Image 1: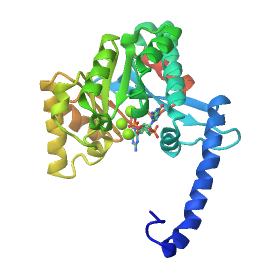
Image 2: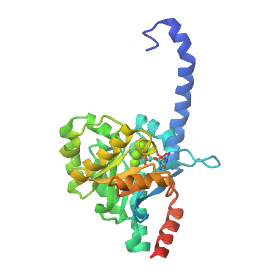
Image 3: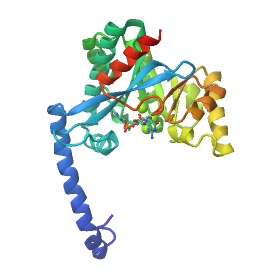
Image 4: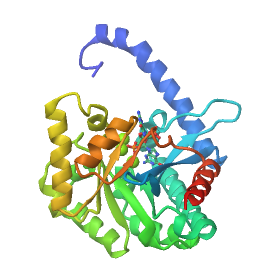
Length: 283
Ligand code: C2E
Ligand code: MG
Ligand code: MG
Ligand code: MG
């Protein structure tokens, strides 16, 4: 765009563009190495049954731990990973860790292990023609039964050709894999795809949970999404629960499952195992 706007703009914008390109270049090669050097770690956030506050699932969330530096959150490197295509390797790696981890928890905790593991899938990975083969290969290696795997996709995938999307979702369904629509309500929400596409779960975006009790409009949306999920027989998860009044409001509106800092932030596998152990003390 700077070019089209003539020389003046070029002079104004060039230095910052150059700097950010340079920064990205470093970040890209660093990220590439991070994957090879295994500096990425998978954290897990419990998903709980609101009535009993027992753990029913876990969401895998990646972090980057450069040696001697502080932990880097995914929002700081996932966009770059998507731009550069590194996301394909990254998502495969997270998928493998997550499936392996749930398999281990099943061995260690049996019935008290999470009932499913949720893994976020970038649109790039979702549309990768090798997706099905990759999943079969990776999950197969870990020994986990595919029915315990939930893939989280976002509404952006519905912008693509709907035949392609439908086809891919059916393929995943045939593999017995569950699909969760993440961040519901933030994107290009069209209600029609909720019944047109084979989905198992809806995760309402945490913005709506954050605003609970503040405006009638917000609460109306939360209520209607609750009703919609019930009518369409979709599992419904509320993300971003931070306060106990939100749990009360959500259970009143028919929400059964939730996740958020109120219960636990994403934590490493070892800390998650401690939570599972505590769970066993209750029973
Ligand atoms: P997401 O999938 O919507 O994940 C939920 C995010 O909300 C996580 O941020 C989680 O830490 C945060 N969160 C959970 N409870 C609360 C709460 O009570 N309050 C607040 N304020 N936040 C809460 P995180 O871990 O930083 O991840 C951000 C996003 O990065 C994820 O959003 C997901 O879109 C992406 N991401 C993370 N891991 C992966 C991955 O392995 N692959 C891909 N493709 N994307 C990933
Ligand atoms: Mg997610
Ligand atoms: Mg989300
Ligand atoms: Mg999100």
